[in-house]
Image 1 (cartoon, rainbow, N blue to C red):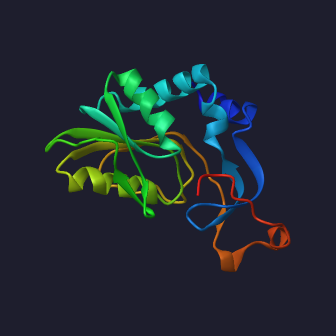
Image 2 (cartoon, one colour; image 1 turned 90 degrees about the vertical axis):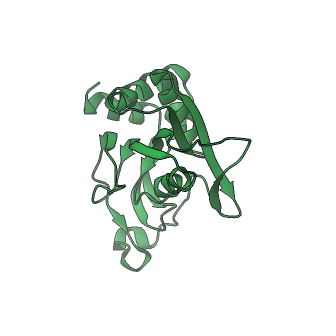
Length: 188
């Protein structure tokens, strides 16, 4: 798939929103990726995530891990495309942890997979979980990289779509957005 075809999938499924948004990172933006709108369609999710999996296929790993919520479908579909086990980390007391009996074996090699990265905080938390359990992070893959500078996670990083999306801290919101209430359509 070309970048234009991938972007069209996001637009056609109303996964790319325009307005004034408060991101999980605390930044404000005129654009928001609500990947759940795209991923709610199983055939589309399978196709898009298989494209991401093809970028990760050369990285030796035994398993895929993703942060909940946004990364669960992406991680599952990437795991399926690669024929690998998928587990996820979820919030407990405000931080990501492994639950539900999921385990990471020493030296087990993982791909960390997420839907969207802006600053990479959730990806880094997931990486820290893997490494804290003695696992190895072989690489990171995301559907959309909307970061201003590509994050350095200390391993190979791949994105299906790289978009320049302006973000603003609370003290520097542009005049045209100041009077527009910010919505937070993503997970809290």
